[in-house]
Length: 103
Image (tube, rainbow, N blue to C red; front, side):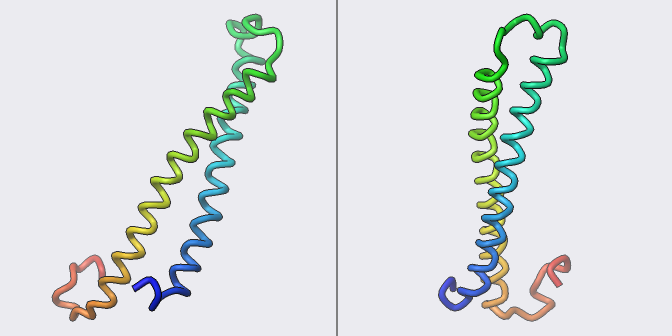
């Protein structure tokens, strides 16, 4: 099935890779920025650390790990939907045998 539809799978994987990369980068930056803002603007946390850089980098690394795990679930779901669509298309079922939402 993958060999027969190599162009479709390749296109879907390329688009999925771009979304995964952008999602991971966004989650990493958002987490690092949140840590920075909390350490800079919240009065209770301002005096807790003398240098905000190491804490922000660690927050970014935690955000990266969370982003990779979250986006891997997104990638798996996208691949599953694509393969399910290809199987349904390959079975060539008539419209009456297909759920109404898939028509």
